[in-house]
Image 1 (cartoon, rainbow, N blue to C red):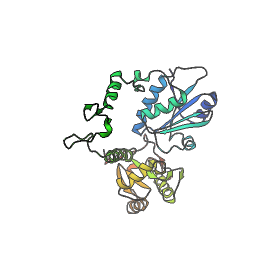
Image 2 (image 1 turned 180 degrees about the vertical axis):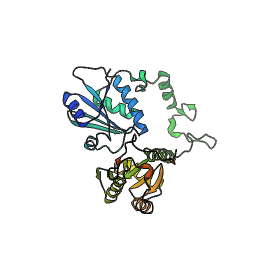
Image 3 (image 1 turned 60 degrees about the vertical axis):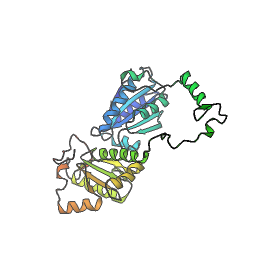
Image 4 (image 1 turned 90 degrees about the vertical axis):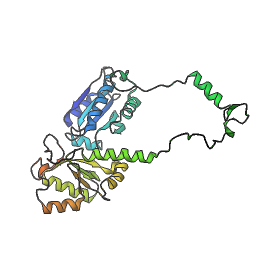
Length: 304
């Protein structure tokens, strides 16, 4: 079975890619150690990799990269959130998948690399194939020739009208409410993805607005290591965070899962208390940047 190769440096990445044939499909997984969904993605990829037998030369290669350890490569592939999957062949990106949805990941891999073995045996559900029963087809045919429960009506179901005592065909429910709850759950997880989370336009290395650039500079100056989310890459999160935070603009900063504010509020907090970020400092002044959680202190009052 195929395995996943851990890549720890740009040189290791380029060496590995150059060793592959132009026909090899490369599955590149970007992760960070502090993002919980990345653990789920790791299991999904291990399961998928195990379903492809090793070949010489390889027809498929699975790579795992810490997005923060190789920032230049992350920028090359426009990684704005993790987990993030890139599928490429002969240096050309074929598809990108953001998130850890097993069905989407599997479908993307199989779309470009073909199907492996039966991954259902090791934890990833196989695709379902449905065959209609003969009895079901007969029942469907019978239903089309009945009128309000009586055969031979001549009009089929076209003349059927529900009576006052007939039960409703489905419960009344709002799909919008379900979508809102799902989004709110996702946002609650995102704001706690790292002890300090910045929701910004662009990335720390390539901010897309002056306010985001300014707050990145402030965090760096304070020696704060932080997680970030590029709201320009996800309209749902961009819109949802305005309501979730009750704050209409970006950037937005969270610390310990609690909303701090936008740029002006962060400036004000630092003016009133120069040690405002003391619990989150993990680097010398002027050396802050994207979170490296093994070096980052957890605040004593962090939300759970």
